[in-house]
Amino acid sequence: MFLIAIPFILGLFGRFNWFLDVFSHFRVYYCIAFLVIGIGTVLLKRWKEAGVSLGMSLILFLTFADLYAPGKKTKSSEGLRITSINLLAQNDQYEKTISFIEEEALDVIFFQELTYQWALELDELTKEYPYHYMLPRNGSFGIGVFSKYEFKNLEIIDFVTSSFPSLVMELETESGSISVINTHPPPPMGTELHRIRNIQFDRINEFISQSDKEIVLIGDLNSTRFSPNFKRLTKNRKLRDSRKGFGILPTWHAQFPLLSVTLDHAFITKGITVLDRRVGPDIGSDHLPVIIEIEWD
Image (cartoon, rainbow, N blue to C red; front, side, top):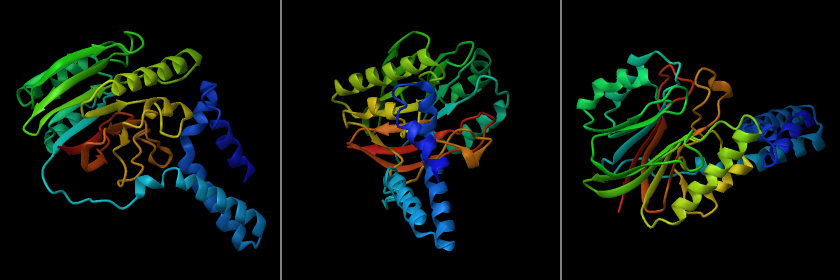
């Protein structure tokens, strides 16, 4: 039991150190481990240990129970279907990604880890998605968007540094306009990248706080909601997790689903209704795509 408690406690101090932050992301697994220990100690009639273990499991579950709260799952209408795909720069399974996009009939697609080769491979989709913008790069921080709807006021914003660009735009649809931020902060592996990611969270929060528009924030955020640093992004309470009512929906690591966590997110402001929220299939990347269908007033 104490072996489970130690990494959980270490994760609580992740705001101070990147290595400690790593332990914060596995809270679901800590919850399951405490539950298993609790059941085992009940069978062994070790009541004190059972009470502590089951109590810890319950406390941890309550930190993500909202994601499983019953909600409306049937769709009253067809909404705007947006996806975010971390392509993985080294991924060469191009047809898997293209087939996924074609089969899902998506309206707007945001890409992370968009390389020059990926830009060439995806070019065949530009006829179906007449509005597009690509900023490919060597390495893991190219970014882009394909859309069936016109977008305006598109900006490349460097919230911290030009090494980690974000896309900000307004989409014009039949339901009206909506703002979208697609971002991909660095993985916090090391003191400097941990600092940059956290500053990027702070500045995105400030940017959203100054807007009076409905906003979708989507992308590979390189953090779970359990990190103490994630509160930097949501502290103004304008953003809601689109997974509420749909579950944890882990996205990384795609090839190890039994140990995966949710690094790819879609957050929304209060005027947006989520009609559907799920993850896509394995497309050869280490991340699964995020799919969200929304409507708004």
